[in-house]
Length: 373
Image 1: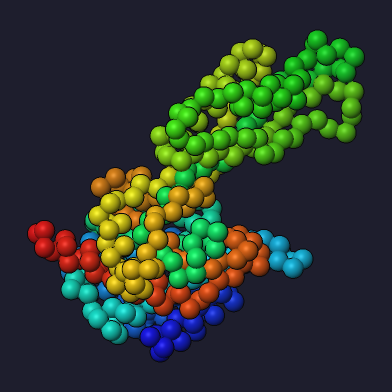
Image 2 (image 1 turned 90 degrees about the horizontal axis):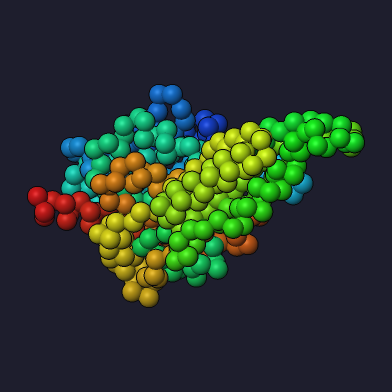
């Protein structure tokens, strides 16, 4: 384990100290290409964007692994910069570890595919990868995400992560300006917005499935306080435990907009900025991951699947390809203070076991698929 661990630490150190934001992961992509090439592989960069994929072994890949490669842009010690505070540097390192395992330690019995995906933080990277067709012939897809200490103890690993669905929505209210002395001649966009915010608190969805929607930004009016504002702009954050509940929340938001548009004689438009799908986990893929955790780290390291309110665009793969068997490894590595904290840190010694768990899960998927055939 020690040489393997040292190699992963070297890769992680480079990736951690060279963060790049979504859609600008140019040097990251080149580093991955150089590293995979040094392992005797032939990585294939995406033609119209950052990121790449690489196949290992003979034949047509039916089992894959996806790792995200982008960093966040945030304030760190008073300076705004790219920063790996979501663990994507660790995810890339584990995927490189899988490549090392299959090329230097134990070749797979048939081809596997590793996908290094850009722009997860924008919620648009998985959709872009889907358009390339690189997962079209995959039957199984694994992913991984480091987990905060409040969810998993260091050294405890989960065979699935049940992320919720998330949407960021933008709204615009078009009322009518008027003199402050004659409000009856105008349609006050702020008053319409207040009614909208109040109505959102009364939306009904399935009480057995958690969901929420709230206005997080609101802007209206100018410098003059004696003008009834005719235009307001706002943003909303919506969350739901399932994709079906998110559909209900979204329809309710549009229904509120239609109702208030008619009531106030105002034009309310809602647009979708970001959509993150909820997890759809395959039971068989989850069982392969659980067996792999036990094999690599022992029975005591196996934790139950995690349910978390966070979002992950990995789940667009199963939303768009419902037959795809997928799950994500929840890597317990002592993430503190928490994901997206600018000073986030974790135990990088867990990356080597994480890589071996992923490689073992992929091997189980290959073995059982062949047995079924």
